[in-house]
Length: 185
Length: 236
Image 1: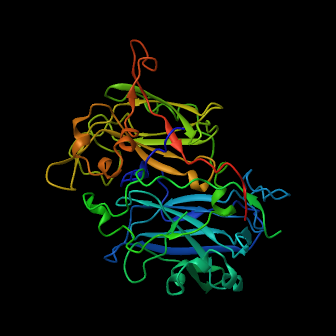
Image 2 (image 1 turned 60 degrees about the horizontal axis):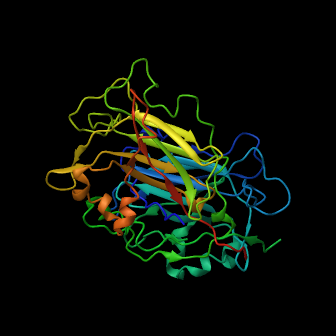
């Protein structure tokens, strides 16, 4: 069996490949569901903006289906919505994701609350960091099997704060008292 | 439906990926998580991923020497390889992307302050889709080494950045390919952040005469192995 290829840092110059910065639009016109906008900044342990991060988002459609052959459930996902996007943070470390709110998807021991899966790359990160964005206006967070594995005092770092009109705030702290929870998955 | 059966992916061995806290690579100091990662089971959210999430590469996207009116300066090379999983199965139709410095060791990027010339005929980014056998092929020029600020007299060995998606969110990999015999490898904290010696060797391409095009370009082979799946599906 061939052994796994190791990870290396994305470095500071991936804009050659991913020039788009700041604002990511994840849904085509006509995708069904509730439009949302998640804004945030990425900061390091000194509170400085991480202006060279690559943020990747993967999510289900409004009905909770993934646009992928390994989603074994019957029925087709929303064809106008692939669920993936990536963006280079802007000069202030900021990112904004315009998408539709995902539906609930099956998880271990019951349904998972609506969430976006996040992969984070940057100079100074030797491998991808993985986290999730949940939404503070979802009562189903209380029963989410992944959130349940996170110490209660750190759970707020995974939950985007609603600002009304479908806008949410989700900041990512790589270190510090508000350090975002990252997963080993 | 609240439960479904999924194929989970195997966890990486401990000596493969660098530890997040790698002091010799100074940028990790204020950026690596200080809290332990929270170990969670894989769900449908992670065993799926953006297989269809990209436009298909165009006809010259894999050839970094043909993206401008003229040819870039430098030593023309071919990089050929396969994307496989840990069971040795090819990963077909997956996006492989590369980016790199030019032959003088300078990136076509506003933040690169190295005092080496830019090449108007070289942008340094390429894309390819693997074929049914998991194979890809890039034509480019050999990147130059360049200095960086990590420590006194620090130089990055020549390298090509690789980005690969694979079948799921869990197979996503960004790495760097190095060249055989490069004396700078011994001094590079990024390369040496990989704990296992055999794991480090997997980041070094091999010179290959079969990939070398007579009278035209040296050939290198770089195979990429992504996470494989457990043999049996699990109820979730």
